[in-house]
Length: 141
Length: 479
Image (cartoon, rainbow over all chains, first blue to last red; front, side, top):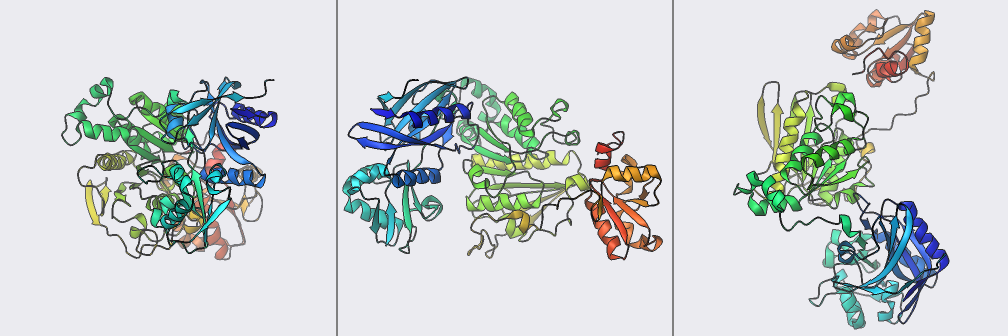
C-alpha cells in the first residue's frame, strides 16, 4: 500500500494539471516499512522526452540522481515515480512498462480536460513484462 | 578508491550504506566488486545472463558509460560512480506504432517498393523502423520531408524555429501560399501527414543549439543537414560525430549545390573537409546572394536518396565523395574526400570532445544593440524626416543594380559596395552621408570603409530598405 500525504499530493496534482495537455513526471520521496509506503514529499521534474509530449514522458537521469540526493539529504528514500496521462485513464501502458524500473512505485494520474480525474499505483517486475496493482491512498478533498 | 553511490531504493541490499568504496581499474571491475561483496544487489542490476538490466544506467562522474567505453571505461580511483535507472513512459493510446509488420494499407501503398528486390518487405520495414532528423524545414527540408514521408520512413523529426514567409515559396514547396505566417514545422508536418498518415512527426520548435543538440539527436538513426549557416553546420557535424550518427549533408548557393555523407562508418566529417569556417561575411547567405528556386529541390532529393540508402543498407553512398552540381551549365563533378587523421573531432586524437560555442567559433557575434540616432547608425524614420526637411546630406544605396530595379528609396544614389572604393575620390569627405542596403549588413561595411577613409559624418541606416518598407513606405516591395 502506498499513501500520499496532503502536501505532496497537491504538488503532484498541480504539476499534472499545469503540464496538461502534455504528460508531466516527477519523483516521490518518503519512507518504507514492509509493504507500507508513506510519501511525504514530491518533486516535479521536467519531461525531457524529445518530441510530442502529449502521450510520452522521459526523466533525465541527472534529475533522478538529484532527486535521490535530495531524499538522502532529508533522511528519506526515493520511493516512487509519478506521471500523468492527459485525457486518458490511469493505467500502466505498454510504453510505461517497457521503460519502468522495479525499484519504485509508479503512480499514474489521469487528467481530463485539464482537471485531475483519478489515479492508480503500479509495481512493475524486473523483466518489464507485467506490473501489479498497488493500493493507493490519497487525501480526498 | 572510486565510490559507488547506491540509490536509496537499493540501500537495503548493501547494509543501508549510502555508498560503497571499490578498487578496480575499470567500471566493470568496480561493479564486480560491489556484487561480490553484496550478492543480493546483483539481481537488481543484472539479468540472469549477467547483462546490465535495460533500465540501469551507470554514470562515471557526470558521463554515461555508454558514451565512454562502457564496462571497459578506465577508472583512476577518484571517480564517483552512480547507478541511475532510466525511466520513461506514456499513455498507451498514442504509444509507439507497430513497426514489426506492414498493414494491408501499407502493403498497397508501398507496392512499387515491395517488388524491388533491393527494398522488398525487409527493406520497407527498415524504412518504417527508421528515424530521421531533418535540421531545417526550408529549401532542402521541403523535398526531403515530402519524399521521405512518401517513401515510408516511420519517424521524422523536424527542427526549425522560423515561420513561412512569402519569399520562401519560390523553392520551399512543402509550404503553400495559405501557410504564410504559420510555423514551418506545423505547415511541413501537416503536408507530410497528408501524404502519409502512417508517419510519426516530432516537431522541435527551436533552433539547434549546443545545449539541446545531443538530446534532440539521440533518438534518430540518420541526421540530415538542411541548414543555411556555418555555426549550425559545424554544430550538426560535431554532434553527429560525437553520437556516431551519419550526417547527410547538402548545401546550395545561387546556381550551385554540394552533397555528401559525413561521419558515416569510417568516412570523413565536415571538419576534415573544412577545418575552419570562412571569415564571417565572406560567403553570402541565400538571403543575400539569391538562389535558383529549383536548386534545393535537386540537392534535397540527393540527400533524401542517400538517407533512404543508409536506412536500407543498399548501394554505394556518397561517403568519401563530395558531389558538386552546377545548375547553370548542368554539370556534375565529384571530389574525393578523405578522413583527416588530425581532424579535431573525428581524428585519431580529437581535441573537440564536446559541443562548443559555434557562434564564437565562426566569429559570428550577436549584433550589438543598435540605438537609433546613436553613434554611427540612424533609424529609417529619422532618414525620412531628414529627406522631408530637405536636410543637406547624401543617401547612398550600396546594393547591386538588379536590386535597385526591384525597390529603391527616392533620392538615393546607387554605388554598389564593390564599386565604392574607386568612387571615394568623387565624394566630399566633409559632407554628411547615410548608407543603406537591403537589411543593414553591407551598408555597415560601407560605413566602416568611409570612416576609415577619413569621412567624418557617416551613418548606417538600421534595417536597410526592408525596414524602410516596414516603417516608412509599405509601397516599397520587400524582396
